[in-house]
Length: 328
Picture 1 (spheres, one colour):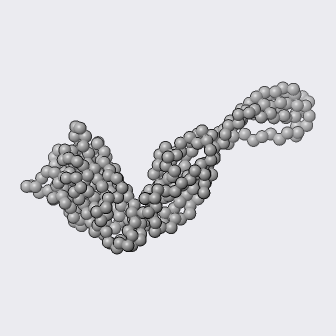
Picture 2 (cartoon, one colour; picture 1 turned 90 degrees about the vertical axis):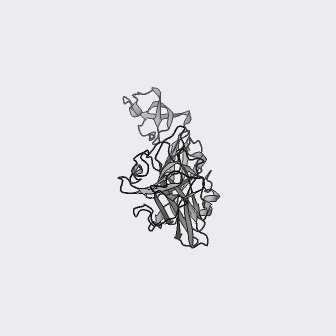
Picture 3 (cartoon, rainbow, N blue to C red; picture 1 turned 180 degrees about the vertical axis):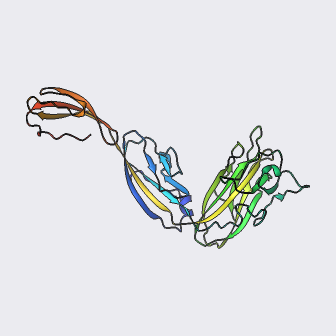
């Protein structure tokens, strides 16, 4: 095992217990001691899980930066991506109010207020006080679910889906605030599989029309069918006006694991003496110096990774091949 390398958390391993990881590459990264390292995962994946998290300044991205390091340290990234089509029927709401159930009531001319929803291309068709946000696609292409938040724990959207047993899946959906309040009270959401919440709740941005996403991974165990639900988790009805879009459930291919060994190079604190010989009348003109026989001078050499070393150059009379010049 690489130095300081720890496993991905047990909860995440449990989700991927049925998957066999694909071996990726092992890279050695050299830095100057006390500096940070930039690490690059493989392109083309939808999620990245780096470890150890406590030694990273950013995480869950294809590119991350470590904290300053002074000793050799190992890192791993587990990269995942879906295989096959989205298993959610009408997850982008292009077919309108079809393919799902809800504990919210469909808004009508006589039924409005908290705990209602509609499928719209413009939120102002639901409520003229809402911001006229487009859907989550760029460019905008269609409809999404517009809701006036109801009671905490109410199911906004549910659908039953056939799945493979002992298989890992990812669930993702997008959400946005459609109104602002003072004080701010954006909507909160949770993802649930057969009633069990996946991870923590997420909160919409306070700014309207900013689409965020929730992404969760789970394993099916011995189940061949699951109920997927998105619930509202806000405490009150003030604010809590939201858009919901692009609900996606995908089987995951085998995850890929890439490893990195970061090796800091300590700066040379001692002065290294370099004796060079030149023919009588010649001068030493390397490293930006101009020295004759009997002269000496200090200079700083920088390695290929940017670490400095101090060199004392002494020029002697003799064969110019007496000493081999170091590479910078």
